Image (tube, rainbow, N blue to C red; front, side):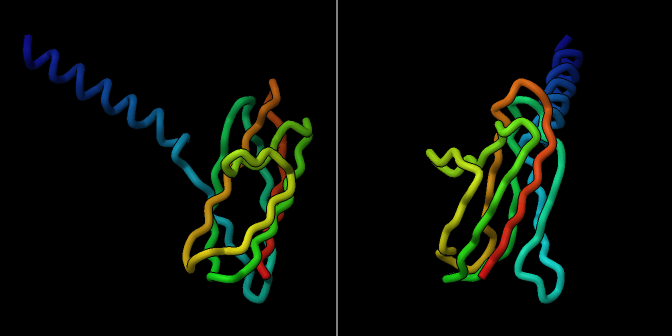
Length: 116
């Protein structure tokens, strides 16, 4: 009885862990050699969030522009809900950007990020 319960707990734990992997997933944005901008496109499910990460140096200005087929996808940086985003990088290392689809259907998006 205890062995069966232990096996069930392990199986449920693995299922729970695997179901959360997509939520934690982030796409790394890489710039081509010599380029200061990059564009990524994809499809975002209704109500879904997608994370992106890119490397930057302190003092650089990061600018991002987002467009979507349903005009319901925007950046989610704190209270910001907009399709334009700009910030001065505060430290060397990775910068994280999130987008949300507030629409009722999956939609295509295009994200362009530049660093100066």
